[in-house]
Length: 337
Image 1 (cartoon, rainbow, N blue to C red):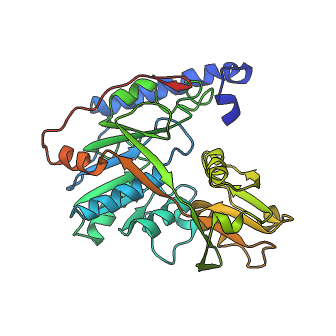
Image 2 (image 1 turned 90 degrees about the vertical axis):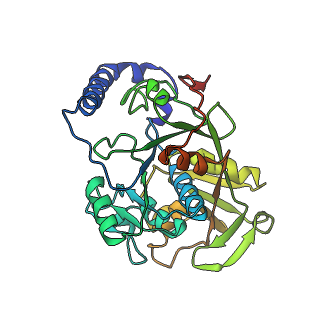
């Protein structure tokens, strides 16, 4: 479907009737919340939602991690609430003993990297209440992938898009959009991941050093891995972004793209070569496989860099300080204007 959503071809056109029905349901649901027919729940602390209007990964997890770390550095006590996609859906905390099948791969990564409490649950209001009851010191909640979860009231909305833009610009299932492009003009700030497009803030992912999955203390540079016969494995929203990153490091490899949140089997990684390269999100699931994998797995950790300072912008918004109004931009199908 990702390939079909890149253009307005025959398959996408045939799906337009369903897309029209989906868009109508989205419109009436949003109106129900705006008019008070459906109630949003306000928490006793500010809520910042981080999301997008299209399906597929745009980099929300590293952005959420960056924002949580930066807010802590500025003296706040943030925590994260997530749906826990592909998890059980039950409201629960994420800890060192959590498994991806219970809490989801992204939530486990958020817990390991952010340094702050993380709770998951299909009912994010219940998850947030449980979090605040267990951690009364928390003074700000980040809601990962929460832009369309209108039941949870929010103080700041952050939307993220990547260099793919909005592709064909059509609603699901004819296109990738959960909400119309006009929704981007209503958020507090638009963050663009990558070099393409215009936004209020820009994010990029940086990472050059790998660690071995079964021995994290063992690290290697791209130069050290370059002579090896490599396979690259990615089951993220945009695997091509990971492969492009590896190519920019000067690595030659065979690419293996899987669906987002793919649950791996050992047989799928039975390659002829010297090593496997993968993302930290995939490593969460690969670590649960039997240790008898044929090849060693090297993981590339990445960190987000955001400019200008998004965290100070968020704090200004929630503290009712004067803040420059972000530029509103028009995002056309397949490109940003």
